[in-house]
Structure formats: structure tokens, C-alpha cells
Amino acid sequence: MTNEDQIDRIRLRLSEGLPDHGVREIIPRGAFPQPGGWSFLLVTETDEQFRQLKQSDPLLPEVLGVLRGCDVTEPQLSWVSTRAVSQETLDNHFDGSWFNWLR
Image (cartoon, rainbow, N blue to C red; front, side, top):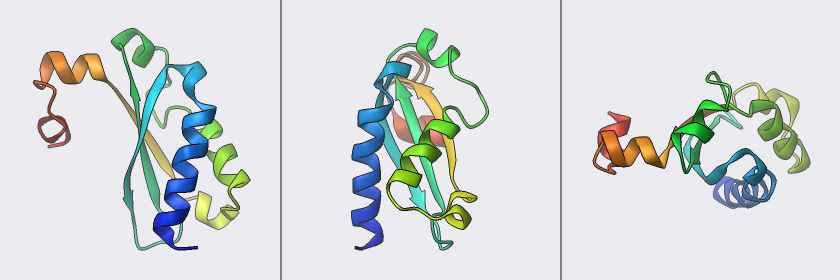
């Protein structure tokens, strides 16, 4: 299985496991040279849903649980991080532009 195939599988599993937390979209932000060096952007619909998430590595334990179920090894898990943003913030403060938000 290629790294891209594994990320697609993980993204699907995450999308099935996180909707109860207001997450409507999961975007892999990058796969780094380290095995398992992934960062996931968790997108909520509203600012209120965003505020309910922990601000530092939101839902990281849940994400790590899904990754463990996808046969990601413990050493690989040490490189995983998460970040959240609301679509409402993107629309209201960044003209809906991911580019403007990320820079």
C-alpha cells in the first residue's frame, strides 16, 4: 500500500469517526519524510463547534485511535498532529480562502 493509499484510507475512517464532534471535513495537511508524519486539519461548520474542541491538537486521542486501527505503528504516531478551523471563520475573516487562512 502506498503512502497516498494509506492516507486515503485513514481519511475515510476519520470522516466516519469524528462527525459527532462537529467535524465536517478532514484534510491531510501533509505527509512528511518521517513515516507517519501526518498533520490533519479538522474543519467544523461553525465557530461554536470549533470552540468546543480543545485548541491544542484537537481530537488527537480520537485521531490516534483511528490511526491505530489502520495499522499505523506507535513510533509513527509520535509524528501526528491535528489543527482545527471553522468554515464560518474562513468565510467571515478570510473571504472563504484557504490560501489566505494558511499564510
